[in-house]
Structure formats: structure tokens, C-alpha cells
Length: 223
Ligand SMILES: C[S@@+](CC[C@H](N)C(=O)[O-])C[C@H]1O[C@@H](n2cnc3c(N)ncnc32)[C@H](O)[C@@H]1O
Image (tube, rainbow, N blue to C red; front, side):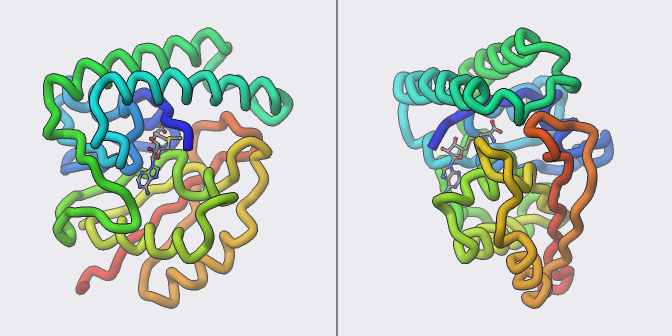
């Protein structure tokens, strides 16, 4: 799976974040090279990231990230008509944001290693209701070709367990072809039947054509 790097600005748009959303503790899972957590630190926002790749040292992370950024660019080139550039303005601006996010992550994981948890879904070593907001970018749904409906159900249930507030997931389409995930409707029905509240909301960000929605999930307030 590709390791990628996104910035605070991209997260703010993808997850329709407002100042008040960032008052509490935010979990970025899967963090990747989380420019979001790195920049959150400089803004006084309490954020932590979880990703199984953090178990590796800086050299492996850097190698995986370089390979990931190359693969990501190649995938965009191969599917050029499926992307819109309005939000970024240009390919160069997107590269700039990625490079800056990558640099910020590399510095921050050295400075604040405790903000980066080596852990993977569908089981996180975090107590129930221990964070206020969970953000999940480009893992769920993006990789639906290899992570099935049952895995998604388990992963979202776990993210809802650790959150006192919402779990926000973006995007809701597959990588590459940007097609809707075939099991999305059935998955939402399963989650609702299990007592989770699920809402699809439009966001002020689009890169994969038509991917303009996040999924917000909240767990039972009594659980
Ligand atoms: C495409 S990257 C997305 C990273 C970041 N959220 C972003 O938007 O740039 C996908 C990330 O998911 C991580 N990952 C893979 N399996 C995972 C799992 N079971 N639980 C959590 N993260 C996982 C990978 O290591 C990789 O860093």
C-alpha cells in the first residue's frame, strides 16, 4: 500500500474542519507521513497519528514515502481525466504542499515520536472514548479493492470505539478509477444496525472527480 503525505490545509478542506473541531484530541488514522499532525503541533492542536509503518525507522519511512509519492504521481498521470485541479490550482502547488508536509512530518516524528503510534486497524491500542475526533484519509474505501466490507465494518467500529465525538472518513471512492465503492450502502446499513450513526456530507474539496463527500460516524453515547 502506498504511503502518502498530506498537509494540514488538505485535511482542513477534506474533512470540512472548523476551529471548534480542533479543540480536543484528534487522531489521524491512517496517518502516513502526517503533515496534519506535524502542523497541528505548531498550531497548538493536540493531534496524534497511528500507522503500522511507524514501527520502522526513519530510513525505511523515507524510502516508502519516496516510492509512495512516485506511485501516486504515476497513478494520477495514468488517470488524468479523473482528477480536477480547481482546489490546488496547479500540479506544482499540489507538489509544494506534499513536499512541505513530508518535511514537516520527518522533522516532527524525530522531535515528538510520542505523537506517532505504530498501530493498525482494525485494532488500536487506545482506550474507549480516548480522543475527541478521528480523521481517516485515503485508507478506508480508497483501498476497497483489497480491504473488504467486513474489514471496513470492523475498522470503522474500532474508530468509533476510540472516539468521544465523530469519525470522519474521506474519500468514499476507490483509488485510481475513482469509482464508488460497491458495498458502501450495505456497509452503512450494517453500521446503523449496530447502533452507529452515519451521515454523508459534502466537503469544500475535490481532487478525484466527484469525490466531494465524507462519511461522519458517531458511536453510541452510552457505550
Ligand atoms: C495512502 S496512505 C494515506 C496516508 C494519509 N492519511 C494521507 O492522506 O496522506 C495509506 C496509509 O495507510 C496505512 N495503513 C495500511 N494499513 C493500515 C491499517 N491496517 N491501519 C492503519 N493504517 C494502515 C499505510 O501504512 C499508509 O501510510
